[in-house]
Figure: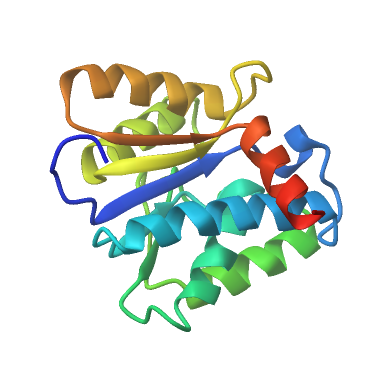
Amino acid sequence: MKGCKMIKIITIQGYKSFELGIFKNEDPAKTYIKKAIEKEVLALLDEGLEWVLISGQLGVEIWAAEVIFELKKEYSELKLGILTPFLHQESNWNEENQQMYQTIIAKADFVEAISKQPYVGPWQFRNKNAFFLHKTDGAIILYDPEKEGSPKFFYEAARAFQEENEYFLRIIDFYDLQAIVDEDNF
């Protein structure tokens, strides 16, 4: 860990499922992504991690929530907060995704919308990124600069924030995921 600041609250960010070509809940790639997230969260639990915050986006963030719920069985002190960028972010999702989202919301320790209105514009996502950077001690991001996508915006904001602040940033890239696949198949 860089510096000696305790890492008590992190955010987990990353690609949306469709950005990774994952369209089915049973896709094996999801299993490897969850293993990578679990590995990073476990390392931080040893450092005093208490809260994981997500915005509830489909893909990496929902999978991170699933990981946290599993880890809570052994680490009961671990908490999950869902802070959505705006009200009713799931309103345009298909029924299956809405049901999965409602299940995650029901199990979370804290749920709140950062913007108290439905989607108005992209500034709500920028506000969400700034909120997470100022309210967390660090971030785990599934992102590879060679495959741009929605995590690019948080990644760039986090890098800029890190220049002025002590902020833990762990990037899980496709090489990390390949290493987990290789370990699993060895």
